[in-house]
Structures are given as structure tokens and as C-alpha cells.
Image (cartoon, rainbow, N blue to C red; front, side, top):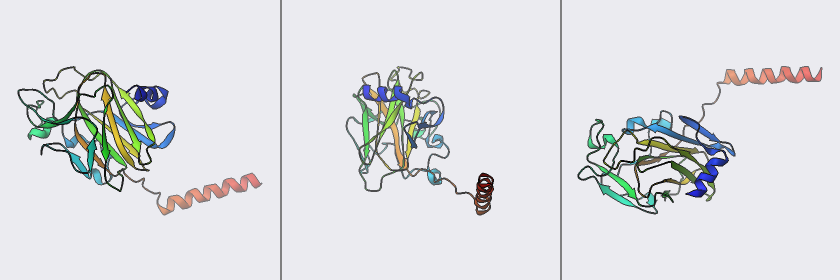
Length: 227
């Protein structure tokens, strides 16, 4: 976990809500600090066509075959223990008394979710639902290159009784393809839900008229320089 924080301190810390470019790579963007109560809270514009290719909510008791995890397991919520995404019980009511989530005891070192398919997603996210202290989220490209990390704090309530107000979406865009994401926190236990991936939106090209206008302006500038 310390390597995440060192990278974050080097200039990858999220400065607010929204897409945060990593200074070392214009193609990598982190999205964080977004309250999340159901799939309707996936940040607008995070996916092309508005929806992920896969959203794993663990309600079937397992992990999708297109994903693997290096620690932890699916847990059902019993007797007020655990913290699933609020809406997984069929209603958004401020209570997560049922449902399933992913629990790991590797909070300080992080739990890694890896895409096991061939065509890498370019948008990858998950929801941190429980733990304590500062939370750090990072990502790795298909070639094994670490894309960076972000650290956020101030929302963990240190309660493991199913509170949902602390739940936060963390995501990343990378046009070159994302192999895995990793998330950890300062406490021993960490719980996540709604692990998801898909395609990031493709920038909309300028209309033909706009391109012609830019070409004309470039031509005028060139003439002035020659004059």
C-alpha cells in the first residue's frame, strides 16, 4: 500500500470530484469521491453508451469468470454485518441490511481485481463500501505498467454495521486498456461492491465545417508569418 501513497504524493492525488488527469500520462484519468447508492450513481459519461459491459454485484454469491481477485471472498450480510450497495436489496433507503459484497482482510496492501479476458476494457471501476482511514485506488495497464494511484479520505465512518453514506465510486479511464485495479485502506478489513468495466467514451470529432474553419485559420497564420 505504501507504493500507492508514494505515487499519489508524487502528483496523482485527486483534487476534487470528477475526472483527474495523471500528469505523467494524458491518457489516464481517475474518477473518485462520488457517493454511490445504486447503479444509477455511475458517474455520467463514464461509459460509452452510458452502461458498463459487466457490473458484478455479487448477488449470485460468486465472482464473474471475466474477473479474478487476489484476496477475499463474497460475503452475505447477516445480522446487520457487512455493507452492500444500498440499492442491491431492491430499494434505496439508506440501509444495506441484505445483499452481498466482497470482503478482504488485506486492507493495508489492497485487493486487486484483474480482467481475465482478451480485449481489455478502457473504463474500470468499483465501489468502496467499508473500511477505515484513507482509501487508495490504482490501476495497471495490459503490459503490466502501473498507471498511478489516487488517495482520498474523510468519508470512512469506521462502522461495519451496514451504513451506506460512506460508499464511494472509484474508477479509471485508460485508452490503452486496463488489466487490473487495486484498492486498499488503512484498516485491516476492506469491503467493495459493484466491480465493473466497459468502454470509455470516444471523443466526438469536430464537424466538417469546424475542421475547415480551423484549417483556414491555420492558413492565415502561415501567410502572416511568411509576410
